Length: 396
Image 1 (cartoon, rainbow, N blue to C red):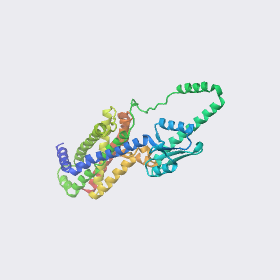
Image 2: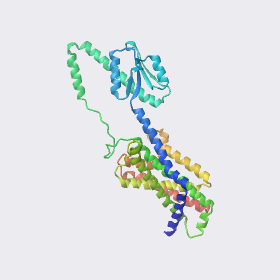
Image 3: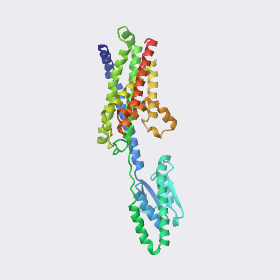
Image 4: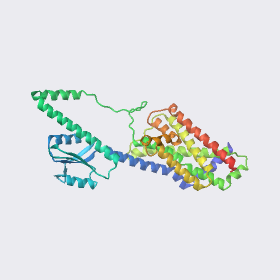
């Protein structure tokens, strides 16, 4: 035990004395996570908020009046019928939209003869679809209601007030549409970008220890530290075990730092929603332990297999970013192509992210995350056995 303690103390001193390395380990993932969350949150707020819409009314009919009211009450659009105190024509509207001052415009021809949606060619395809699709539904719905009202006015005669009253009463009796979320006792939780991104960056930060961990192993191999240690009664298990112990503490610090940012910094300083983590502390710690060991195993394996620091840094950093992309760190996995989704199933980073999502969002417990946690533990054992074998074969 004393051999393990002194070896771990040596490893801890190496980490503490490397100030740039500490910044990479702790500050870089937090800053990257904050930037990504801010970008996604404010993008979603802009896209899901009301869109200003230029309304070119060349008809001034009952249909256009109803359409304007429906646009206002929809919650999606804010129609502007006047610009600079005067009605806007199509030429002026085209100029305003093409210059980027408006994203979209709607032109109604004389006598409701023509309806045209004008969009800015610079806006992206998904965003264009998000604003054009509900606008088309509103137009069609208003047209349908206008036709029905005209038919009633023509055919009902003196019965029209009674029919209108009957329609109004029947409409009030229609059941309301509610939204709920599948989960065990967490129906009040509203999914946000933070709920999905923070677990991803917890795993991203943990796996990013591959760079300092691999550097430590390679430096000791190149400087002959391993050879000197091997002259003493110290086995590979003790040497690597000390690294596991120290970097497990590093992963725990990273986890608690991410939690602190999500629980306290985001809501109090950035005006973002608070990270909701549920109340199953045991499951959270179990998921963290499994993810930490998998990340440590990955770092030790890369350091053991690499011959130079350049190899370890390039391969390790590229693999962490690649695993992060396909595992859901930056974007949810379900929006990716099926091929990427299938490949991500063998990623230890995705196993860890899914564990956190099950606990944070779906209200799962230890039994829920046990299968993926066992996979993470198995990956750690495989990485450690492989690393010891590599050292034994190369006689580091």
